Length: 232
Image 1 (cartoon, one colour):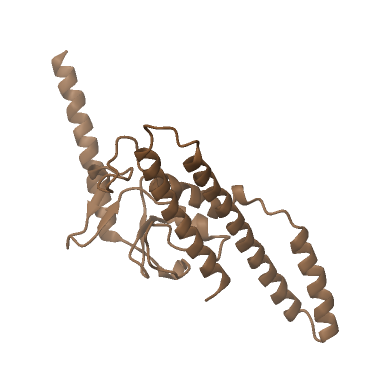
Image 2: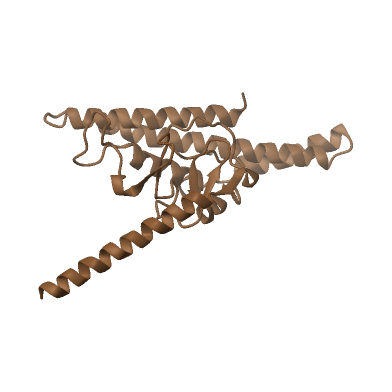
């Protein structure tokens, strides 16, 4: 297994741990735990930052290695170029907190954390409401109306053929444009393949459902306004 796979697996474990610690925090909220749980939550974020920094550095070193191989015709030249390139990577400051992957991780943390007033048993531990979901005709899958990255309403849905999850096209294309190691952000997704544009297909059926849902919402809003005007 490659290095990126191990890092992504570790990040997934941190997400699961974060959810567990948040649930524990809700349970022990009635007494003072000395801030131990909050320390664990803060450590999760610090560990994630370190892992993503390591992953970014690993990717940069891979690029430097490929450049050294492609630009060298002797062992001596390779060693010279590799020494120069790898030293530049070591000195490079990686701004993890402003990276797309770290921001995605933080959004996933928010999604994984129990919401205020939510049940701890997992029956209501997400931000989505019933009206924010679309049930597939087969009843086999439920999709949120909101993009997993931007958290905005999906306008142009594309489906990842490798796992079946849906994103907004503008959002996913912006994310993967300069990042070759991005995997599906949907919590619990078992797909370990990187997202590739060739695997993103427009979902016409879901597009129609979204448009219908938006039309219904507009009609409902219009009806409410008419009722309010009639009451006055």
